[in-house]
Image (cartoon, rainbow, N blue to C red; front, side):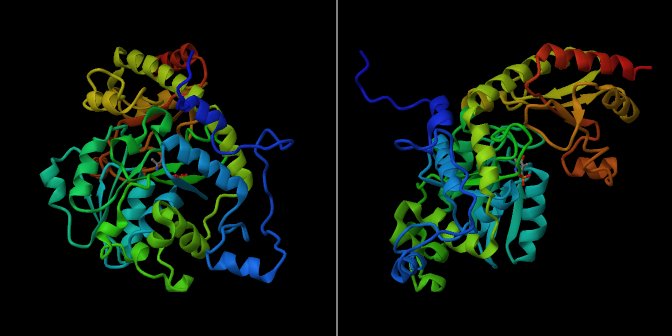
Length: 431
Ligand SMILES: *Cc1c(COP(=O)(O)O)cnc(C)c1O
């Protein structure tokens, strides 16, 4: 008989972590659709604003529905605390701004999602934060050489969007820690079901919950999760925002007052207060619904994607396929080390040229043309014809995007139907 305390599996956490109803309370998470919260005495309200008591007062900062879903994501990632944001962009912005200010510097993998690349490469520099991009496959010495005294964090993506390149998480964690800075990783494409970056040394995880976590193409959202492992106080001179008095809270010091919760508390009480990028409680409810089946869905996405990748690899019209599950993929060994399955997104290049690509896409009946990825509907995007259409082939290559690259996101339809659709569209593209 099993009497030892059992740690719940990831599937159980997907269904049950976070919201814990009491006697007679709703089984499904309630949507607390209220901007504000009531108190009985002036002192009760005052203590909230001194951060002496915790409690809800205004949904721009915190809302019970959001907090329960954030607690669930923290449990899934194995972190100490999390917060929901209005989008994945906001999550990555908050992760950086919670640590960096004007004069600081960031080192980031260069193969990251285009939106994050713009945020780091264009918008943060306007705020006085410089960013150096590195090839994620460069040696530890080469990446280390980009660090400066004012470097405050290292950034990367578990599985890059759109290139689906697996990051060597332990290598990045080692480099960050040897420079006394945290390693922040965007875990959107892997999800905590396939990879939990904290187990490999990452300090902070971000998500675009818009993708697999939501999984149905319903709500834009993001999340920020802290492992609680990075020792800010050991580098107190580098992180005054966390380790020195905050004048906007009567000189409170986050690390002293909140210990391992310092990072998320500061992000909530300072950044959310001032920048107001909260997720709506209604969207948090949709996200929660998505999370409850994440483990089942991501397994199916991965299984079907493997079948489609193997089919494409053997098709005479296909020049190349990039999917971390394929044995000859340059990142296959790393992907096997860090992930329990290979997720549902792949890239493919066809042999026929741009007109052929367009005839192929126009002939698809089940797979739809969308800028989105990672939900239940199979979809395709050709950056050279869509998101990056203003670039020449040379400019595309310089941005790391092959002109023939098509991003294919495998949904939850029957894999045989997805393959049939590709088969008939390739045939149709020849005429
Ligand atoms: C989509 C995406 C983002 C941005 O998220 P939004 O929810 O669209 O703001 C960030 N990182 C990755 C890896 C993404 O795929």
